[in-house]
Image 1 (cartoon, rainbow, N blue to C red):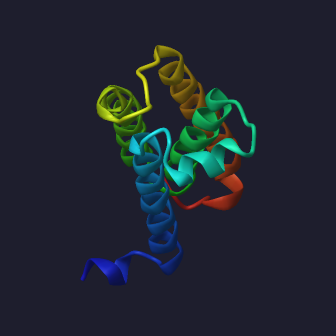
Image 2 (cartoon, helix red, strand yellow; image 1 turned 135 degrees about the vertical axis):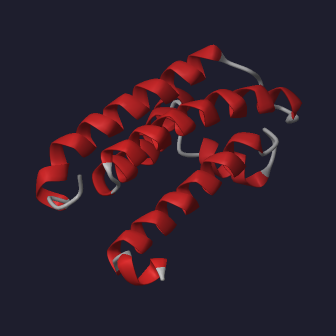
Length: 128
């Protein structure tokens, strides 16, 4: 059985990553005037910083805990997700398409991947 071969820590990290993906999808497609978006806006954090941090997390977790090949595939998928969600915002009330958001997504992916690669030998030394 596959779950017996995968450690509890790996399962936990994958669940956290999946929850983060869902949060990014929902946060990206919520209408601009929704209460959740108003709460996020109350923090007065630049939206490019929000994009960068969100996508850094989506890159950092797989690079840290997945095999290199799986992590590379996930990084490409996360980048594609960022582009697709930006197009999806064309259909979400109060939201707009912004190529600068995509740049922030890609920058976040790069930063998260580099941090993950730097920490990987200490956190997940047995992962190839």
